[in-house]
Length: 302
Image (cartoon, rainbow, N blue to C red):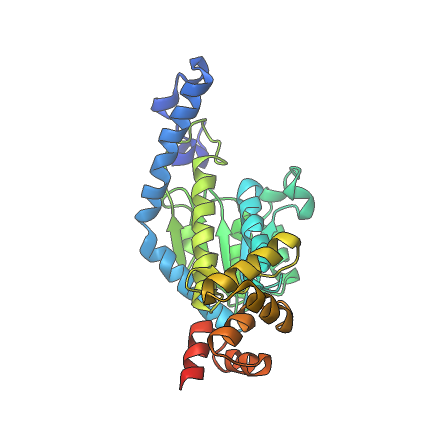
């Protein structure tokens, strides 16, 4: 039976795990762990391409564009996971980083039969979400051939967006559509074709790199602190104040006062303390430096 799936690395049997059904639980998890060790090594080989993708995303953000992940099944869920963590971590608007999945929101939890096999649905979703020339669209599919994802990528190219492909096989149909390809080939899965395993892990690591790198580059991080987080619950309020204290070395009373006066805006509180500035002055300096804390402090020193 001739089929493209037969040729994919992700669909090949793994000789190291052929007897896994005869092993104890400890032997199974040890084997899985050994296979997982190679994921980071595989990604290391494409770091220059990942960095270029991050640069594309930074440019999009600076021009008012968005980062849009598109996938089906596991790949779609991983994209949604990364996108959904950006607002609480980096204080972004929910629209700035989005994750779209074949079959819509219902598919996040339940399989939607046939949704991933429809190129037109992928194209329609790009139209619905108003994809344009300022956006970066990252198509994610372990196989590199999922019709929904390919349809979304093709339509995104037509609409002028920057299109990046992320897959776990070489020489897939994504190559002909993408302006930049990220081929994270991690080898056959522990369980044949179960791409939620090594392939999914590689995808998550890469998406973490893309979004985190881009957020750092647009000023969402000072030192290695998430200074633009949204203190939307008790844990995040505590973390916000702790970050201010770590960044400034100020006393608890000083931190609490600055946090309150800054209306819970961590960057503003940090600049207030380090630049000995009023809340209005801190906000002005951050505005003049596009939200970069380090540059705002330097501005105050001039």
